[in-house]
Amino acid sequence: MDAFFASVELLRYPQLRGRAVVVGGRATNQPVEQADGSLRFARLADYAGRGVATTATYEARALGVFSAMGLMKAAQLAPDAVLLPAHFDAYRHASRTFKAAVAAIAPRIEDRGIDEIYLDLSAIDEETQVLARRIKQAVFAATGLSCSIGVAPNKLLAKICSDLDKPDGLTVLAMDEIATRIWPLPAKTINGIGPKSAGKLTGLNIVTIGDLATASSALLVGEFGATTALWMQRVANGIDERPLVTDSEPKSISRERTFERDLHARHDRSQLGEIFTALCQRVAADLQRQGYASRTIGVKLRYADFRSLTRDVSLPLGTSDAMTIRKAAGSCLKRIPLTQKIRLLGVRASALSAAGKCHPEASGRQAELPF
Image (tube, rainbow, N blue to C red; front, side):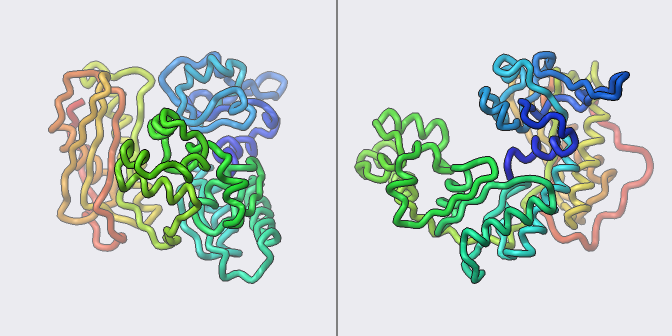
């Protein structure tokens, strides 16, 4: 999906089409209706805090703003960009809708998250370009959103191709076109070659995928080790034998919150308690919506100095009840020193199973928390 979260927001605010828009920050950054009925939107330049960009329109990306970038840094690059808060319920709804539209045409799907899927089209007897356009049209008809499709012999190449002509792109690649269409691309284009590895490759004068495909095996082994070197050369030559995984199950479900300012367990006790309860409620809602129960509840805490700690506890029966999750997570918090200020708090449910016989709902008042 193209700039997925931002594109969903533009359905809500079509007057922002063509403008630099960034999604992220506080939920309080809602547009404000003015006397004449128009909306006043928050500007990125007015933001103060430690939030990050969830996504950005292509107009904002042209100014250097990308997802996971700190909003304060983004404001330096695009001060006049519109800042909108995220609406994750809307994004999840749009995700389910576009996947259902695709499944009606190509049911063999590997789900790769809220905005990306792999499809196996090999059993569909239809000309490739026509089929791909039909999928794109079905997605737009169902959601009002555009997507970009890459069609290739394997997942690696399809992923690369899906990014070549965004937004609203369609790229079809055959194996005999790798040298002319894939090799000129930067090596970092390959999913799995991150900034650190790309920097090492540049130091070896390996800049493009073609450079990597023809590089000395001994040189790569010396820098990355035998296993990674073999993988790099295989993918650079377009070799990827991974099958489509159509029956994946989540290993855990979690929610976490990074605070606008560091919070203290004693001085900010009330605020921390409200945030903690909300996190437990959201984890419970996620479990119930997806039909799972959890037997292991854990917490994650990050101090102001960026050190992180986790603790978890196992339950006798699985649960998806918010109060039970809060009680279990609270017991984990009591095993963590809370003498420093906190910048992040998270709650995680793991050891998942299909909801059936679950832990009985907790009753009575909420368990006491250390904050």
